[in-house]
Amino acid sequence: MKRSLFLAAVLISALLLPGAALAAGSADQATPPNLALDRTIEPVIVAGIFAGKPVDELFVYRWTGSSWEQIPFQIDERNSAGDYVANEDGVMDSNDEVVFMSGDTGMLASDSIGSALPVSGLWYRVEVTNPLNTSSKGWAYIVHSTSLSITNPTDYVSYNNANLRVSTANYALGWAASGHNGLDYMSMYGGGDIMDRTKLRIDYRVVVLQFHLTENDIPFENVVLIKDGAVRTLVKRGGTVTTSYQSYTSTNFPVDLSSLPGNLERFRTSTDLAQGVSGTYYDENNNAGKPIDGVPDNVTQTPFTQAWRQVTVGAGSNIQVAKLTELGGVQKHYYKDNSAVDPQDTGDQRS
Image (tube, rainbow, N blue to C red):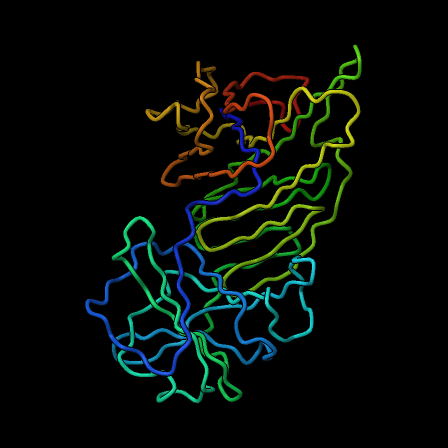
């Protein structure tokens, strides 16, 4: 009992990023009230600060109301082309990123962090705002110091090269070790594997000849870990980079079909659940939900104006939001729920 769903995307994530305002300073002025930020699962990414400073001399703190507390963070370097790299030059450039979680922000401090910690004269206060509720705010402080060290051991996400999996307290994702370049493992909240595999379909025509490609036809690429940090992992396979946080994953999935001969007739990516998995499927045209039970359903595929879909399995839900670029033709949601074996299908040949 499974289904496949359409998710052609450049970016897949759970929620929109919170707004962040950056200010340099030497003293803070409290602005009551100090409201708790009510969006906590998204990252805050700050670039273009502390140019030329060693990356291992930057730290992030929050004010708890009574003391300064270091929060989990990481610094990811990018090369001149904008690609993430394991190590570049070890100093902050304009495109290097300081990353921490919105849920780790604190209150707006009434005193200067410079009077309490051995930091340099320049530091940054980051104000994070929920764009859907602008009164909901949180603050973090990014500082430079030659004497501070990492004191918060929290690690939200990890990568295991032995099984090619990213794991957090909320989910795990795994890449296929052979056969195709996609994912073949997903679990939620410590449960079992609910995924068969991710799938790719490309149909094109050259004059009167029809051609059909699947994920099995794409040249196999190795999985390469770029960074396993406290806040996120960066994993690359071919041209696809997957960034995983504690509660969601973002995938940059570029597809260039410009060299394809003939006329492109269909392009589809989908995620196929494992045999026996049951639950409920939702999208913009199916707000009431469709049961995932191996029995075919009549599901409305259009309009495709909101690229989201949700699958609820047991106590967990997987929500996919896609940002699509440069797509032509007719865009549709894709859903198939049929436990019968399809000899033309890939994976376990069920949907």
